[in-house]
Length: 413
Ligand code: V47
Image 1 (cartoon, rainbow, N blue to C red):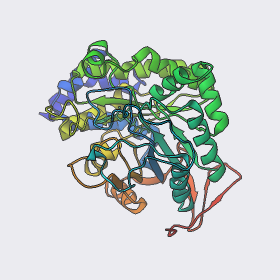
Image 2: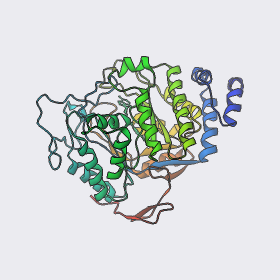
Image 3: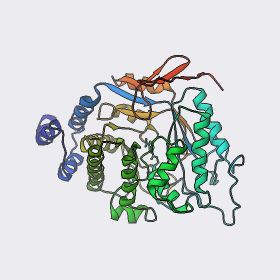
Image 4: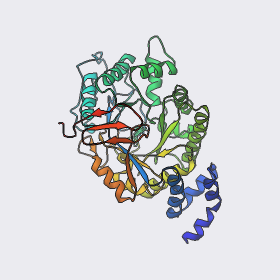
């Protein structure tokens, strides 16, 4: 039966062998298929052509600086309303802060001071991390200077750490709150001058008006999201791209989303300055959100979506299974279904949390990441945020091709 179904995809295989692209109809046919093995094989043919048996991971820390947000996206369990009449925020020192190990589902709103953020960044940098990934809600009261000061302070304390920060939605928010009002290009330029290195891919959700109106009506739409990424690429700033799947969208709407990403990538590659490094399909976690009555994606849906993302975006170099969303077990399996990256150590993650209870501590050690990769038959490669190999010994790390190196101490408390 598999062979017969495999035959059905001969035309798709031929297109993939020729470098793609696939059509909407091709993508929907792939979703309709129950032949998960052929899907994996097709996706893996691209993965292997691009990366052989290499599988990437990174040593990073996520920092979610606030959960106060002016938006009310139905899929989001992270946002909290900003208290009425709250006093202005004091930028250094003070933070209305939750304990770092506390649960985010305790209904508390929080905002981190720059000092607290720098302390966290310094802690992991001293232990050898190469990246901080920073995002938060759209805070109604913090000024733009909070974000530039944050980048400056991290850059000063951790000279070689890669600051991957602020989704396109946050960048648009900064442009709106800046005084005098800045353009998207000016916001990005100021953040880069302050130390920002690249943008994460969040906030894309599903590029479709129906889905937008149903699940995240108050958020800006696809035109604005692409505008930020286009501007970043023109400025030479690399970015990632996400797709939040498994809520109210259809398979065809997912495929359209991926086609739009791949089309955008064509333009960025043509201009040759910067582009999307990876697609990060994010598996919807219903717990605690307004859409908690939905089941969320099954394991098979996760695996298909990762494989189909690989096939629909052959011009985007990497497909990342963010293990926080897909779980470490499924992220591991997906390494033979088109995925070549399982992200990083993460350590703390506030935006989603599985299986209720517990704390926001969600960590995989480097040893565990490497073991998952080796067991999947792949070769672990520690990467930096731009997918350059990290060369590491017991006390120093450096990026291939760079003249500097960083000294660290793995056991530092
Ligand atoms: O923008 C929110 C999503 C994103 C839920 O660029 C949810 O390397 C699932 O963008 N269930 C933030 N997802 C995370 C993100 C990200 C993560 C890892 C790596 C990268 C990268 C980017 O999380 C949000 C939103 O799309 N999200 N709520 C939820 N309930």
